[in-house]
Length: 256
Length: 301
Image (cartoon, rainbow over all chains, first blue to last red; front, side):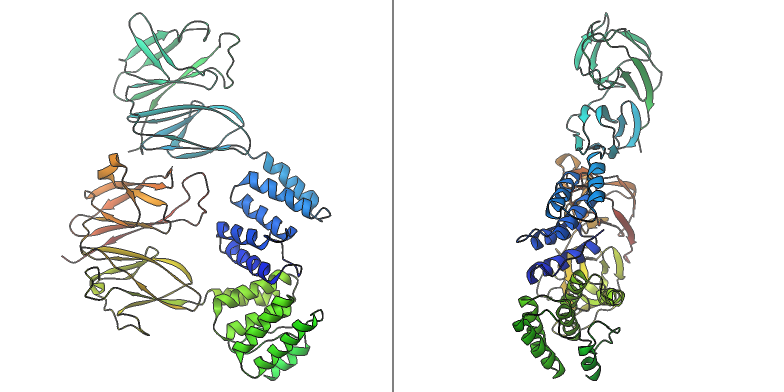
């Protein structure tokens, strides 16, 4: 995908261009980008701009790549590959958001929208829109909601300094953007949080009736271990009326 | 010399160059007068065997008015002067400004061959008067995670003005050299170009306890030392103590968590050596892909 230099380059710019090509071929993209940039310090040559954009694309710096491909088209308005580059720019603009989930607890596992993704760390390509991410370890729990846009890269990091224990992880989809606590007749609930409760069937009204249309019902099985309770009330927050929902539950298994 | 003279008028055709044969191109048509004069003087110096003058004159011509033939001849002289890194760059310049050159395939092959010309890394240590000198005879020497020398293999008097040590033929580039003995660990990062010889001196504190050695080719890749996890002690180029048996190493790449590495920590005086390398650039928003190498380093009791 690399373009060549031309005799319009100065000798110095050609030296930088050659260094860039060598670094690029050797896989050192950072160094290649530096040399391409230096080779175009004086005059913005279309071929250098194109190669810089190509390196930025391979470095996953998509916003930069879109801008630099645009500069290439400005510098070479009659480029033979104009249509291809315009198509590439449009494709890059649709790059799905990527989120990296990690933290201090090396035995943690990661859930996206209530579905187990795998052991931490995870780098996940997600659809644009609202999402809920849970990172749960033997003694930790982190819940995040985010609205992701194309081209975004997010890093969600949880710290072991925030230790949480409790056999029931009580969490929800991004539609239910609430946190806090409430009390039933005989039990206090914290949400999103880990709650310590004995085995049995539970029925509780979260916060109060205006948020969720029904009470939450779930079973906590007998035995040791951590139990995941996920209230799926859709992905987009909506406070105009009470929210219908379903409850998903799962027993958690942590890596050794 | 005759071959070079013939090629002076045959502008574009290049034969695959023998290591010490001149393969010049003819005077470019579009040179400005000054560049043309410098170019002709360079050819004369080249034919007279005065390669350094020839190089300077070709470079002068190129600075006045860049031309593929001049770039090629600069590369050719640098190759014959054994200035391989500079020759590689000049051949790249030639290809960059003459992408459709008839000899492109031959030049690319020549670049590949020159780039792969091994150099020699001479691993040595400080003088015996320095407390941080290492007993290289009883040491493992590892380069980029590969064992190059076992304990008991003799070291030798150094060539040139190098101290006594151990020579390893190796490709050009930057290399991580680790020296591990039963009681110490030292490391150095040394760089050499194609065909170059370099001394790489490694020193180490006289005593470093530990059953695990970790190192990486990237400064920002660190291991969390488990016994000190609460204090967030993370390090690269490190030897530390872990109980024998199955363990997991936690790595960090900048602020990113990496997948844990299962290791078997030997009991007794042996050492588990772990080397993590990555070729991905350091702006990725995640722990980069790592190539992991593990060795059990056995030391006689």
